[in-house]
Length: 547
Image (cartoon, rainbow, N blue to C red):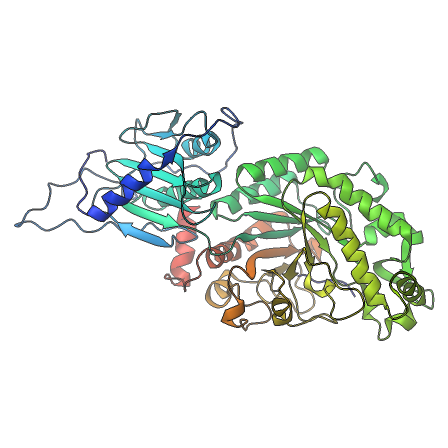
């Protein structure tokens, strides 16, 4: 049973005293930090601010309001995807890139890469400062509220100041500025305070069943960065292929595949855009490509019939091969998380797994005692692989149907559950995992699974349905879990997943276009927990303007 799983030019004083006070706080808190990377490598982008195209531009303000003249209206809220969460409007002209504008950051601090990237995108110069009228200044700020991904963006007196407690937050502030300039040619006068609702926000890409070039993946990384997404999970292996270069087991590698040099390039670009790459080598199921090279490890039932994709976990050699691969690739992926799979081990699909697979049953009893079952052996297998990646300082993630109820052996606690389905044999309601205290990442296959060819009753997800119906609390089907269980400390995020079950059903270009609006909708719903202000039609129009 095969799986279908389915990151003005004229100065004027503020009328709004509150905005002035906020700005003073932001500037006073700017911190000069030690240089980490010098000028840093020039970072690529295929997005640049458009030339003059008739969009509204900031102009010199009119004379100050008097008792006999109308007051200047508050500035309009900047429009971005995802939407900003807190906006205090000012009454000035705002800021627009103009001749002489610069992006300023301390050349001895860690924000030079972010500053140089933004300067290229806005088609202005980077400068070490000091900042002056017309500039955008990036700075770290001590004791900044909201966490490492929060930022404050202040626009006043012909300047923009973007601050945060960490580089990621400042970077997200640059995305807000960039999108606002793409939309209206400028950013409004005022103060933005913004932060994400969920800490994990991203996309899963199946590169095992279908090959995606490094250039295609890099383009998606840039797209994700503009949407403030921060994770890319790469499903590296499956029954159809194993698509990453290996030195320890070159015999399992399929063509075409990604080289280690390409993986390093992908990971480096992602890190520069504050996106973590999460590798996944799925086991003990979905190992057909490995088994093609090692047929002696193929699981067979009591009648000698091979079980598709399933490795014989009673054999020590099976564990050695998978551990070799995990250890080999750990240095390639320096991020926090490693996905171990664990789903759809076909031995557990049998009505009586112990009768169907007596060899696995005997192995379970030898290792865990007379009461142990095949399920216990499978749980122990995943525990052992989790120990390997924890040895490299990583937190394991596993699919929910690899987390079994009861048994002699229980899953080790130091892991997170990626919940994708309630349809598989043995799958449990999401509330069970939450009651047991697991952190969950939402990959609900009802909304978030883009399965090529639409097999097994899947249909391509639409951005509108995600935008109007789905929230991180909707883990299974269409109903949310109770609000008491749905906070960001329990459901820590979500990922939109592309699975290539019928690889030839779409070209890579069609995939890129098909996921475009769903990915934007997911970005919105993971960043801002409130009901969206814009209609779907307005959201679609905005997507066209800000990308």
